Length: 211
Image (tube, rainbow, N blue to C red; front, top):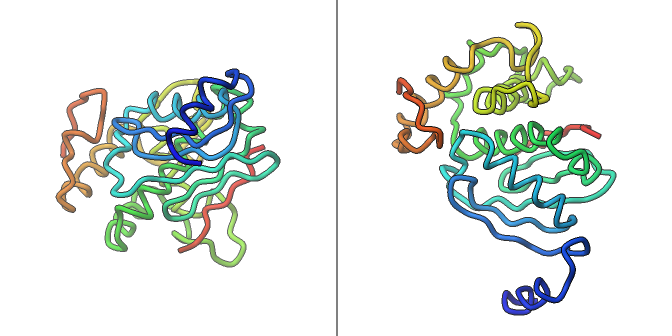
């Protein structure tokens, strides 16, 4: 189905029944959404727009698939989101941001960057190894902390309750400053990293079962 046909379908179908591939760009990043209802797709867009991180710094568009009864996970360039999770509305936003944060890791960081982050975030291994628990993987701590640091609200399910939690090892401002410095070293424009205009100092599967 080409773009014109999809546009005609959008006009003809009711909002409740809408299932299509939706492009988006700008501060919320560049991505397409395949599957899901109109409301579920809206949760993805709202989650990314709510975060103060500028997802458009990702160098390639991200493909998002929505499927029911599947655990949410990310691989380079692609994210799968559980429709059951998105049906929870705002509760799902922190998870959407977490999965997109894995794309920041996949597409923008190098091993030296990961070593710097591991020193402040903790964890026993960056990548899954030997059946380590989710919270002991630094890649997961990175994704949770990014989601929390750029949307620090009680509505965010990534909100830490102690320094032992995945997103609790470093204050949000310190994490934002470190990430800005690292991305600046890669000649990525740190002025645009935060949409809110705050003043900063400047292939494995990340698999989850948020259901």
